[in-house]
Length: 448
Image (cartoon, rainbow, N blue to C red; front, side):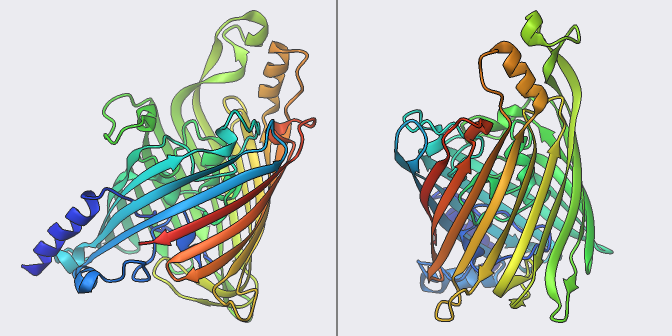
């Protein structure tokens, strides 16, 4: 009886104040010890500002309902580059509930996740006053509408034999091409595919109807998904889209998750690809197979969009602990390399490469702090650049943008992370003549 009452209380807590849970880790990707500041992952319990609510939160968790809430704030100021110097702050509230159906209902191997998000504030790169002209956002938490969203509402069931099925309203980047979101620059946050093919691959907080089937064994996994491609999911309202689907996006991914070296440190080596059945305009060619910028005809409609990615991450030194969502570094150095390629017929930014490192516990007296350093190149498709030059012959040719970020993460409390950072952007927008940007920022996260 109490368990059913707990379920009712949990849903009231979730949907009453309206809020977000971070995406559950689908794959065993090594993580830093301070990943609570990840803007695309559920805050950790029970290290929270508001505690255990006089024992109610503890009782709910014991009965299979884990209530979470958090807020991420990102401040940024351009001290060099852009049209004018400016500063903005943007943020995201996340409220969620995860239900263990085995504990609550006796349905073993099942999990229900519900997440609500609210984004607010302004983005420096979207500010006409600042005029950064960059390709990759310098405040990743901004975007997809400053509005309330039902970001997750899915059910996952263990099927036996290593198989599990997940279906409902999903944030596809939480499963496929998933990556942590500790940095403030978008180049190093969330599924890389969504960073350069965001016109149809919708990362958190946008959800779509979909399903994912995975076969998982110790040390490796393979999975395939199918997601509705529906631009109506981008509308700035809380409603679940009905109608308007343009096709189906089918991603596949295989991963190897070994423990290497004399200390058996965890790694993650993943390769994946996708096909989207939706039609899309060619970036250069018109209906007569000549450049539409010359003929004035409509762009040629291409059937299907596709691409692939490789994501590599390995802890090199130190120690780690096992966690239900994957091994987590507790001290030492980890490195990563992300490679993403889209099709050149329909996408303006056709590839991105990002590499970096995390170091947990750089100071003996601050074992929970960590440092992150990363660099990335985002390339403008040469076919799209050709079309732009034909349309405006006196303009400069766009090539590649180079982004770098260094942060130091301060674990003020277990429920409060503050990350001062500096970003350096060379050739903003891909233009050689553009003044390099220097962005000073602070990314902070609180778990309620």
